[in-house]
Amino acid sequence: MTGDLITVGGSSVRLFGIAAPIPGETCETRYGQTYDCYRRSTDSLQALIGDASVTCSITATDHTGQRIGVCRAHGMDIASAMVSRGWAFAYRRLTPVYAGAEAFAESHRLGIWGGKVETPWQWRSRQLSDTAR
Image (cartoon, rainbow, N blue to C red; front, side, top):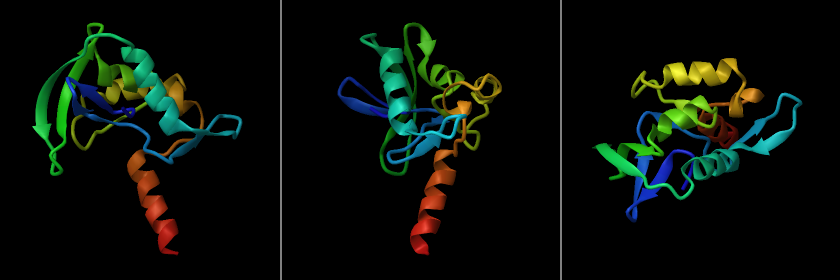
């Protein structure tokens, strides 16, 4: 499990419309302290689901064969909950559906928005750029 990937019925499902921090990604608190935002996002997803039953509606399969879906637990959209709590980003290139939840989290400085953060695609790009030097 990661902040945007869960296992349901023995199969992994990427949560539709969001992106969470990736392994190795760090963030900073508003006080400049670095922390593992990948781990915090993953832990938040685990706590959110707990031992609840999860159901997913598969919406697509990506180029790697990864199933993508809208998943629910405790009667809530898991992706929406992760974004509104500030532990995942709305992936607007795919859908605008979670943009409002992200605006809420950012304006209330929740989760990763409480300090300095990069989207996973910005972080990955910077890592590749730094490695190329």
